[in-house]
Every structure is written in C-alpha cells, then in structure tokens.
Image (cartoon, rainbow, N blue to C red; front, side, top):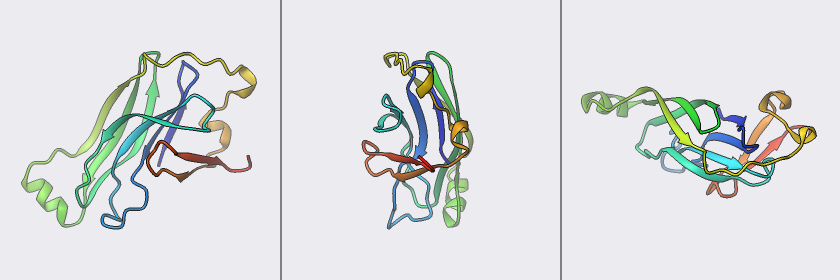
Length: 145
C-alpha cells in the first residue's frame, strides 16, 4: 500500500516502501520513505526515510498520511514475522502502530492552476508504482492516462 496526497504547497507527497525487489529479504517490507513531486508526479525526490530497518522479517507498511501547512503526519505499522518475531519479542523490540512527522516548511509553493490539480481519489485507485529503485527515479503510472 502507498499513500499519496496533495500538500497545501501544491506538491504531491507519496509514502511508500522503496525496497524494490529484494533477493535476500523477499518477504520484508522495508525502507518506508516520503517522496515529493513538484511536477505532477513526473519526478520524485525523497525528503524523509521513516524506517530504514533491513532486518529479516521486518514489515514497515500500510502508511496513511495527512498534512497541514507545516508537516506531514504518517501513521503506519511495524512488525516482525516468522522466526524473527520470537527474537523481536525476546529483545523487547518496539513494534506496533507508529506515527512520525515530516517537516515540509521549506517546500516552495507551486501554482498549477485548478485544471491540473488531481488527488489520489481522482484516479479511482488506479495508481501503480512501476519502479522505486533509488527513489530518485520513482515512476508512478495512473491507469488510463
């Protein structure tokens, strides 16, 4: 699951797992990032890495975000599964629902005009992350576009 929203500055914000195809840790969901686009999603720049745990069995996922003029609040879950769950429990590793804030006060305001404004709801849920390698080159495709 990803979450995309329009910020008051005009930017698009995307919260996603940017791990790509992992050969070693295939069932993990790692690297929970926040990326910003100033050009209606043609290019994306990571502004925050919320989770960078690459441990086997880790899942940082199911983000939901809201924003005001100064920050993005991201709520997500972080758990371990399989044999790593026993280890995490034995070590009192923090798990569960988390919330982190991302400062967006330094983003310039963008004026796209009303006709170019879209929201995640406008796409009918047909947003697909095609590539997230390196996150500097995240590509999203909107079905039917």
